[in-house]
Image 1 (cartoon, rainbow, N blue to C red):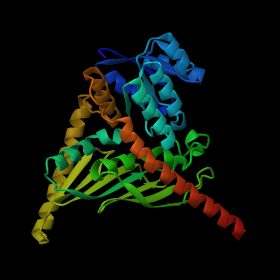
Image 2: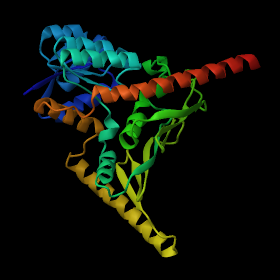
Image 3: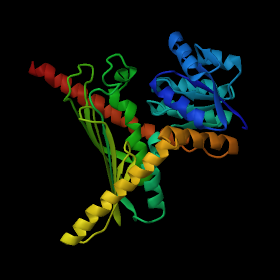
Image 4: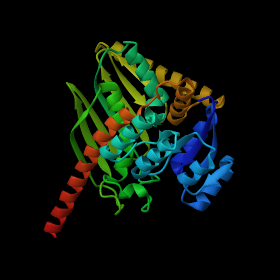
Length: 357
């Protein structure tokens, strides 16, 4: 594929990140957008200067202007849209989570294999600078083997999805968590291998009646390696922290502030502790200077930017996408079980509340 003419389906919040990313991809241009909301799709086309706007994917396909469909709709619609596009001979890129069920994921994989269409999925945290740097350190052997991992996804009560009573995420099994849990799952898989959920607990602290749960803690295991994910919608500020505990060092990653702190082995003397504090401060200063430089020169790239850029490059070079639909299917297997566990806990809580009253 020499020239990528992109059609984006779904003009909600996440589509803006995709539009920005495609604008930075030299091989591609967004030529069409579609959404069932007529005013939204027309406004999106006007703001981003997209030539064509449509009310459906069918209309976009009939127009014949695109050769790739980028799906940014709610996840329960992804399978039918992806299959429709692939059967029409188009490549597809799917926002995470790829689907909400393994059954739907299997249908996408089956269709891709039958049609030979090019297909990929957005797992954007994998392509944020701190994760890419940590991945490089692990692959170079500088920190030894990874044997434990922690992911903390912290959100305030003003999170745009959580705070919106009418947002579609609240209708999903697992609610707001089901939309975002793919992130820690695919990070765990990347650094630890195929993971299995061992335990999951949720609780309710906030005062939104439409959110049955707003705190979550889950543990995962692969062989002897252990992982933990914590998510909250009650914290004082937004933050995404990832800790990798390795044989030779600890890696502390701050995704939002785009910093990496490498903590090597050290002695317990007072001198070594003081030197270690200085070294950590130096790393943070270096990261801050680098980030400032990138932003000032407009060279800073988000995880969406890098993932979409690499996907575009894979289409032109006819190579494997940065995230395959088979990889995404493995994530959905774990996600589906987590959502089932959330629903079970919430139903039990409701039953106990009814009995108590």
